[in-house]
Length: 318
Image (cartoon, rainbow, N blue to C red):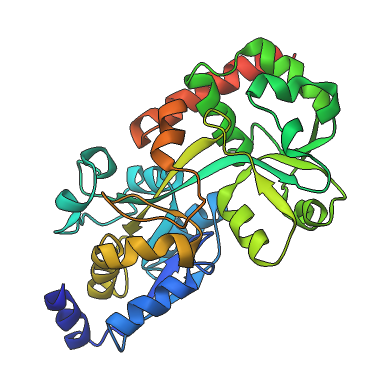
């Protein structure tokens, strides 16, 4: 690791520019990296989805590169890799740190942090005894008005329902039956204040990361931790083709899967570590238990599973 640091410093590289939705919320982690490797800072650029992929494509095509690393869900990373927009680099410590399925066999990316997509609720509006215990409970009319993003947008609802369908937790009848209970919006971001104040009672398909960060502001909210109610999400990093700071980028990817970084992902990044034997904050749902109930879809599986979900959903919602 120190050899990578020395190479980055010798090359005059003083920063790494990370593109991704969590790139700014992970700032405490970036500060930890800079403490470990003085003289190299990490700059987050909050962008995601199609906008991020378009930015990467434009930079690679024009040669006017600013971004070094893509940090996103497996879907976006695979899309960028399949378009030839990522470098081949597998950290030397990856094999010892990560499960084999978290390492791209072509060396284009690694999956190095995780999350959950599940139900956030206002504790003043929903008593613990009234929480849903299964996804079938969400069909009850008392949950009418649940705010979700478009199930066909590729966002959180898509991720959750794709996993639920593949795991056999839902079917076409469930998708049809839940529609009257849903209020579909382009994004649930404007509703975070509403769930915090109790203006709405539940956000059923939202991120555990968002829940943790809202709790830090004092919001009176909870997260349903019953296994089978949440879908796991796998996220990772890849170096962008022709990154302007390649050595510093390799250093960040390598450091990110060390025990120092992974044990800090929970308290500092509100996300789950993926290396073996890493720790999480007290009271968090255990990721392995959640994944036993709803297995995570690996990069090679997700696109096919999503296509299956969209076909079933479109037929069900006709």
